[in-house]
Length: 147
Image (spheres, helix red, strand yellow):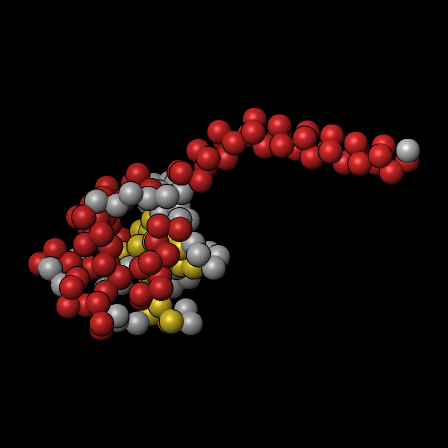
C-alpha cells in the first residue's frame, strides 16, 4: 500500500510538470526561435567579409556565438551602416567606448545564437581566428571583399 501511494505521488508529480511544461511551451519555443537567425544571402556575404577582416565572433557556449563589431569613432558612419544590416539580431544600439588612453570607438554586438555556430567553427580553432582556406574559394565574392 505504501509503495503504491509513492508511485501515485510520483505519477502525479510527473503529470504536474508535464502540464507546466505544456503551458510554458509557447514561451519557450518563442525564446528559442528568437535566437535562431535567418540571414539573407547578402547578410551572409557581409558576415564572411567582416570575419575575414576585423569583425569577430565571441563564443558564448559550446554551440552559440555572437558577432561583435568595433570601429574607431571616426568610422561612425561605416559602423552604423553595419549595424543597420544586423540590427534585427542586436539587443541594443551601438555604444561608445572610451579607452584609458582616450581613444574612442563604437561597438555593437548581436544576440547570442546557434545560427552563428557554423561560422564560428569555420573561422576559429581553439579560440584563435583562422582563414578557412578550404571554403574560401566558394565564399569570395565582390561583396565579401568589400567588407
